[in-house]
Length: 138
Length: 84
Image (cartoon, rainbow over all chains, first blue to last red; front, side, top):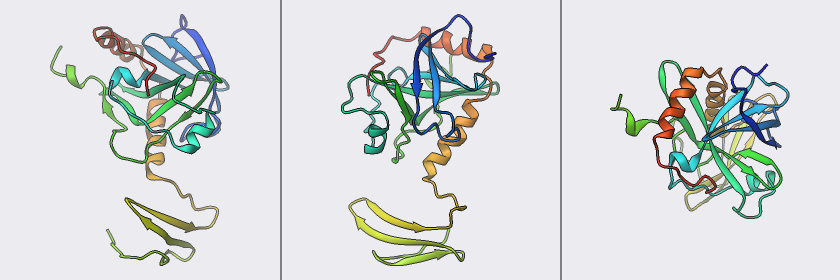
């Protein structure tokens, strides 16, 4: 049973990650589950493995990514149209949630292939604070 | 940190069986060639960082943390989601 994904969510699309994800290279098939505005990425073979995602544009509307040739080939994307750019969120009991903007998950909606596109520059953090602008509110 | 100056075509050694050759220097990038035994993992550092972050992100997410995140997001302006 999936521990992490609420049961009333709907499966949006099955995704294939040709290279898996860093640290999870053998996990190549995931379900993308929509719980607007959150998304869950749940392993098809290991349902207890799941990731929480948010559209990058929701975190940083000015976010820009130049996909590498390799990543572009991996997801069969000839242009940027139909690509969804999502950030992996880390939540922990003892620290505020963060988004990995160093390595967004890029999904080609047309064919259901996806890749975690690890940037080579150091423009964006792998621990971007999600609630920074509201830290002072209670 | 040990700092070594090398020109294109020059090589340095790490241990007995790892060789790093500077193949090309151009603009803001250097092109390196690495010769290492199969058991030595050669990885761009940002991939290692992402792997560690993925491990942290894959930990069980508490319902409270997810709900509080949702609550905060609902207070925000909607933004287009299909943009690179």
